Length: 339
Image (cartoon, rainbow, N blue to C red; front, side, top):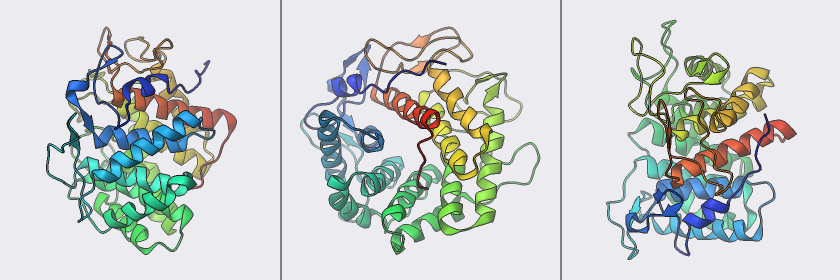
């Protein structure tokens, strides 16, 4: 596999001095739909993860951080949706936007010294919250694990990570369904990745083992032959047909993130192969044999149908592709993660 360089060209096209536009028509941003914290937080995450960011990318990370911190309410919750007039159009909440914001802030604390002080201040406000939503807690847990890289004695981050692991719970013992939910949904691999992070940071061997078992089961479910065949947008449960469509890039990116963490914790080739298969999915090694990576724009197509791609290149899909390519490059150059 020839892995493309990580391009931020389309991400820059979708961004302005305020943030990151959520949707695109083909490669042109649909500005009328405004911005959302879910995507801007993802943008901040990939920007601060880049090992050698350009000055342009550093400036973009600063824009994204300003957006994310402006979205936070005094009690630590986050608004998600912002209109072109810069008004917030929803109530601050503890849904995925809170978890993704906490993940991005925690990563900025650990990996972006110029942004760390501001990011830490807002992380410390949000870390007092707890979400009733499983994925939101898992996203936030990954941010807490990042903070503990920089500040191992951060009690708030340690407590959030432990609470998230307890909330996700131990794996089920049924041999054909070890998942903590009755149905696979979206960004599924973030659940075992949160357990991996908690097990490693907190020194909890049982939690680490549960995370590896859950991730291995998910990787098997989402592999067909030598390529990924991931959970479709409507989810999946035992007895339903596979493959399912449409398939979303965020599912592939979550799997790449989790497999990368598992590889750096265990050195098992299985997880490295999982990351590389995730990158190959964007390059056409998928159920429809369609390429989702656009080398001309630098963008990622919005989804995989049974016989075609969605040709629009919105923020979520482009960021999922960038994140996956970052992980794949780290596999090829053996660049270790800290946690």
